[in-house]
Image 1 (spheres, helix red, strand yellow):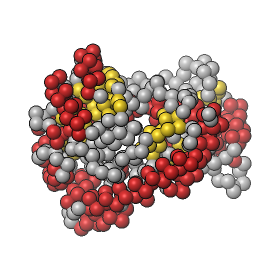
Image 2 (cartoon, one colour; image 1 turned 180 degrees about the vertical axis):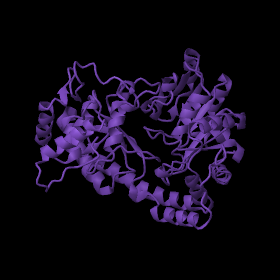
Image 3 (cartoon, rainbow, N blue to C red; image 1 turned 120 degrees about the vertical axis):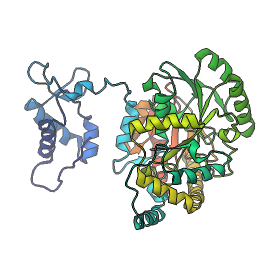
Image 4 (cartoon, helix red, strand yellow; image 1 turned 180 degrees about the horizontal axis):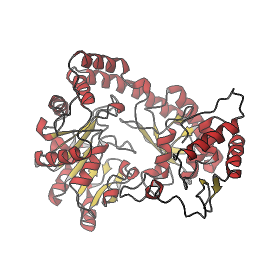
Length: 480
C-alpha cells in the first residue's frame, strides 16, 4: 500500500507523480518483478485521487514495460526478458513459509484500519477517545523519574508486573502466584507459544463456532486442526463436547466464556460448571480466553473457568489491550508452573521477552489502582455506545436483520434476514467508506452475520455509519 500521497497543488500532473512514485518503488527493488499492484480503486482511495488518474498513471508504466496485466486478473511488475527472470528474489518465498498468510479480508482490514476517512464498524479495540491518554502519560512520567528499565526482564517477565497481575486475577477468583504467570507481548502471543510448545503437529482443538480463532492462523500454521462446536444463547453446549472430542482426538478446548467474540454471548454459571465437569471426565485441557471478562456493562459475569480449576487443567489468557492500551502489547497467561516454564522457554527463543518499558508501565498502572478506575469509566462509556448502537439498529435495520443485546464486551452480532455474499458486501460497504467485519471471518460458511463494534467508532460516526450500512444492504438486495 502507498506510503506517500501526491502533491495536489504541485505543478506536475497527478498521474505523472503517481507513475514516478511506482517507478521508484520498482527501481529500488521494493516492488520486485512479479509484485502484484493494489487494485485501481484501492490505489485511488489511498492516494486521494480519481480512479481515472490512477488508470492514466498505470498506462504510462505499461507503455514503459514496467507493469503488465496478469492472466488471472490484476496488474503486476513485469519480469525481465522471457518472464523467467527475477531469480534470487525473495518474492518467490513470500507464501512458501510454514505460517499461513492471513485471510485476504483480514489483510485488507489490517491495512484499511489506518486509512483516513473510513468509519470502522468492526474494529475490536477501544477508540482513541476511550483510551486513558492523560493517565498513561502520568505513568510514563513517573517511570522516567527513576532508573529506566532498559535491560531484559527474566524469562517469566517482570516479577513486579507478575505480582500485580496475580493480585488482579485474584479479584476474579483466580489463584495464580507470580511463578504461575507468564507475561506476553499481547495475548495473541499465547496462541503462538501454545501451538509451538505444547501441541504436536496433527493434533486437534475443539472450540465454539463461530469463533475469533477462525480469523487467525496461529494454530493452523503449526499443523493443528480446528473443529467447531455448536452454541446456543448460553454459550458452548457441553453435550456436543464428548462426541466431538472422541471423533477428533482433541488435544484441548478453546473457549471465550465471557462476552464471546464475535457473538457477545456470556456462558452462565451452570453451563460453566457443566463444562468443567465434562472436560474433567474427558481429561481435556482448557484454554480460556478472558480478554473481555472485565468489560461487563450490566452485571459482572460468573467466575472464570480458571477460578473453578483445582487440577491445573485450565490455562487462562488475559490482556490490557481491550481496556487500557493496545499499544503497550502486554498480556499474560496463567497456569501450572511446569507449563508456564515451558512456554517461557519458547518465548525466550522467539522475542527474548516483552518490552521492559511496557512491563514496568503496566505494573505501575495496576499497582496504583489506575486500571480499576479507568475500567469503571470505560464501562460507562461503552454502555452509552452500546445503547446508541442498539437504538440506531432499531431505527435503520427493522426488517433487515435481528441482533442480540450484549451485556458486555464490544460487539453486537447482527443476523441479516436474508443471506448475502459477504465478501461482496464487504467491498460494497468499503466503497461507501465503511469498514466491516463480516461473519465469514469467524465461520467460513456464514452468509448472514456482521460483527458490529460499538467500541471504536465515535457516536457521530456510528450514526452516519449505521444509516449508510442499512442503505448499502438495501441496495445490495437485503430488503424484504
